[in-house]
Length: 130
Image (cartoon, rainbow, N blue to C red; front, side, top):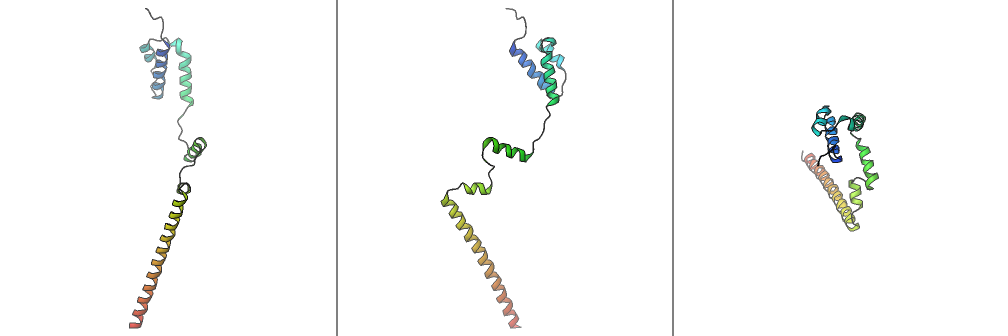
């Protein structure tokens, strides 16, 4: 059986290769057409569209804030922060974390207070000894 023209799959493969070559800034479309044995007249309108799309679509790095807002819009959940992580913990864990934080603050404050008074007592003893 003789094949009268290229199949749709072959044309799709040709267009893929042409698109890849244009994106890589290689403009040797004629050699690709010869390799796939496709007449230029058959795909000229598609080649024109590919070339115009390559010129029109430029790569842009989006703003970080835009990406975060888009993620919240699409997924529906904010980016996890420390406060968001604590907010979704069970109440028992929140209470335990609060108590531990309060105990730590009290420990640091007490230690600082006792260090300050012991320095004061040592300085007073040294002053009296003179």
